Length: 428
Image 1 (cartoon, rainbow, N blue to C red):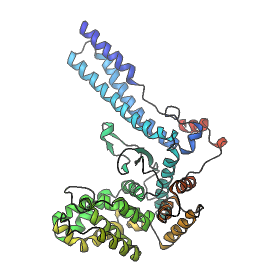
Image 2 (image 1 turned 60 degrees about the horizontal axis):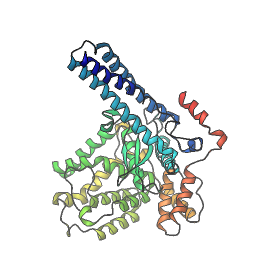
Image 3 (image 1 turned 90 degrees about the horizontal axis):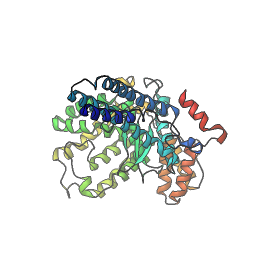
Image 4 (image 1 turned 30 degrees about the vertical axis):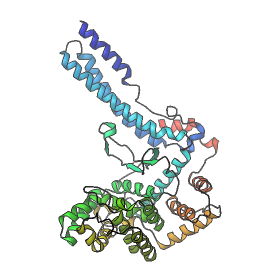
């Protein structure tokens, strides 16, 4: 009887914790009426609550079985059943914690910058929908951004099983922005959105297989096929980012990859990111194929003056020696060859970038330098215009941030954005 009483005390304590984290809403995350212009959509809250409800139902089933059997089942069986309930409670705690961390930042001073990045990500998806209607299999929740420590942005794709959540799939894309990289001219953010586009377009595996086949066919070297196969997703995201933002995105990625020579010229076996030296040559080749030959030549010239592989011979000879011939093949395969899941179109067809887009971006940069907002520039192109404006040195970063974020985040009249209306939309 002492043992059973001891077990019962553990079960009572566990049951008291069991259903406390089954729902998240505006109030629980500290979102106030004035924060609503920056808040996640009701659809994001619904997706989070559907995931929490699924976990909560599993907790209820496990707990019901435990309550029915604990008094008579063997002690070890009761201990295992307690552990199974505890596992699901842990899963709820982790899922709730992730959603709370992401949603709760919309009630802080960082909320406008996060909402601005949401707008950029949504515009990237809109650009694909405009160029290729019905390409997505159905409605897709836009990526949501949040801030965290870390050197570079990162993404958690839709549906990916997360170790952090004990195997729970991610209900919508989440893009992490480091605390000091919330400025709206970061080309690397377009790169992270592109990872999500690749997954949502369903060409992840198709792209990898095509890259491996192309590399093997034109090099005859299985090692190179394996290396470029490992690099496929990062190369795709780089090339898609250029299609989303133009040459400014390529230069932005080059700035991001600007490191001391040992890092840029060192090959990392098994790594998924291309070696920095070759990565910029890949970007330059993409610019060349898009018709920006002068920009491509300038980028390659600058990069080769900064980095000389002869001074730091840390790249395999077979990788360096074949780059001149193989890089154009890889760029052609990823960006210009058709894919079945793109309805027999190429990446450049579903994310078109034209000379007129670059002209509009340059004009937008001129207006930003003058302290004016380019009215019709899409958010994804605003990233590039802001980067060009910053590079002139004729505008202060704080004023540029205010100008661009103010344009990206459309504030609505207070009467039209009430917490009650938002809660009603969430409950609908």
